[in-house]
Image (cartoon, rainbow, N blue to C red; front, side):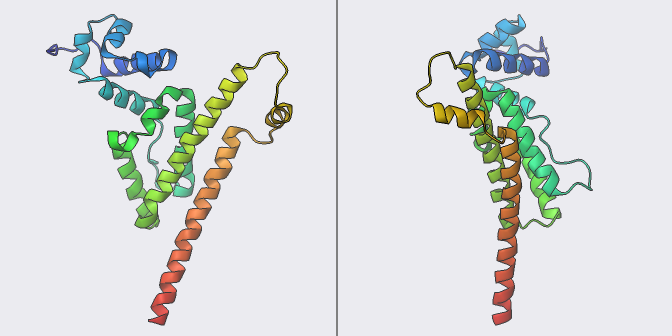
Length: 215
């Protein structure tokens, strides 16, 4: 299908409408045709911005994760900005749970590749060994995704409650009496993960120094 020479609508507006469709109707409902209907334009006009549905999904995910970025100031330690980015990723996915399957394919789809590159550079500049950069970033990203899944699932469970007697009263009581929210648990686990990685780095450096002394 030929693309119009002049776009009838901005890419940003198209992505905002696509995100709204995904949030309210699900990813399965999102298509060039459905997006055209939502924007009151012929679907063909959207081919100026997107070749296919996958490009829309990539753009929508970029839009939802707009606040996840390498820090723009020099004084902020990676121990602060990296878990903060993971927290922002989690919040974006809690707000837009339909994007969680897309995030699981983030790397092969190339989503956030430039931001990841900038983060890798920054982490190295701050002294994180290259061998530990990807394990550190991937572990926090996976934690953010799993925490978002847990939060969304918990909300769905609450929505489905009714007045019938529960077959699992003790479990229900434990859930109601939980001492930490999902967000608080995420923060504790993220900080613990950073401590674990730091410990692994220190142990690795200690072993290297020990081998050098013996040789």
